[in-house]
Length: 151
Image (cartoon, rainbow, N blue to C red; front, side, top):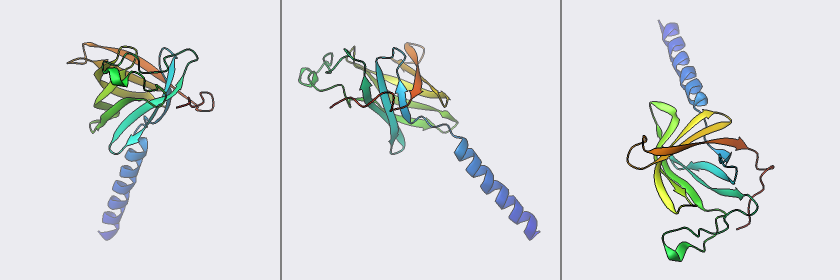
């Protein structure tokens, strides 16, 4: 009886570690679909957040489209782009309820981030409901290939 119980506890513990290890990781450096910037995504407490890490030569250098005129001169480099995402406990590949800032419009949208694979991230920004939005697929890249922009 004790041996059976010990094996059951061991199996449950092992499966818990396996499930946790299998949870996809959205952190890293992600090249946006238009290939104009790289966003560094990291854990921010229980959430994920992301800032501009790299900008294409000739790309936006300041937050010039921001509706708040006093923020239009802040540098794009390091600018927070995504924030406040919570992991969906029923689907660990999905982070939802967060916000995404579309700097070339100066607009903030509700968004969902889904890990497609260890190399692709699906990002959907929307107004109201996800049906009313736009999607992009971001590609994981190495920071060696996309050196950090200067703040």
